[in-house]
Amino acid sequence: MREILGRRRRLRFRRRGRPARLDAALTCATAWQWPVLPGVGSKAAGGRGGRGRGCACPDPECAVPGAHPFDPGLLAATTDERMVRWWWANRPTAPILLATGGRAPCALSLPAVAAARALAELDRMGVRLGPVVATPTRWSLLVAPYDLERLGELLYAQDWVPSSLRFHGEGGYLVLPPSEVGAGQVRWERAPSPEPRPRPHGKSPVASSAAPWLPDVGAVLDALVEASSGAPDGGSRLAY
Image (cartoon, rainbow, N blue to C red; front, side, top):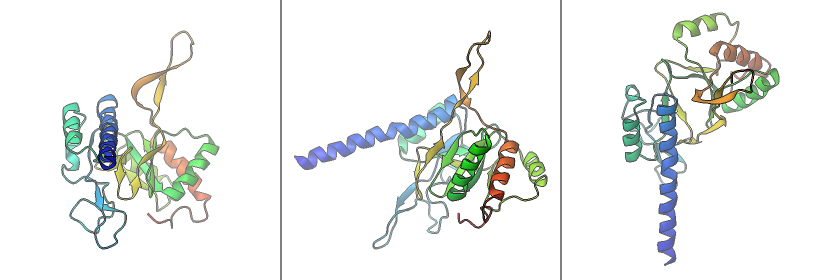
């Protein structure tokens, strides 16, 4: 009887866990109009005594296990509710991938250690940040959409940019919470918050139900470069 009850408990926990990922994907796609698609996901590492999680894709040397598109490909990303529901009904544990660029958010990312240090410095500087996605290896600061021309101009204006800083724009993607990938759990280091909508006649602003507020990439890039310049290695020699 104990084995049966234990099995029932495990099944209940799985059912409770399934809607969270679907709900998050639907919020991104329908409420925020962020195009999403399911990631390839991870699997138990093979081999005798293997530990951790490997990628479910065919590449045994996958650099980002579980955290990339495979089938469907990145071009399938959508905001269509029916498609999102179908994907996660069939693959309830699939990671949520955001297709960056276009009208969707873009991002700048740093290795986790450098990013934690940079965020503390940005807070000290009074820089307002948008959502921040944290994985065990990298943290990504979401910003308003930008194109390659704008990014090129911003980088040209900088005297120095840390080599560990990466840019996620048109044609890129990010894994979003509450996904779990080969490296571990994905979470919000800074949760999304809506842009306050001013109330007429000078009353206090009220929260909007629209997509989360996103800062301009130029302001975040300038602040990140300034914050990184004070580090012993500028964040450049930190591992992925």
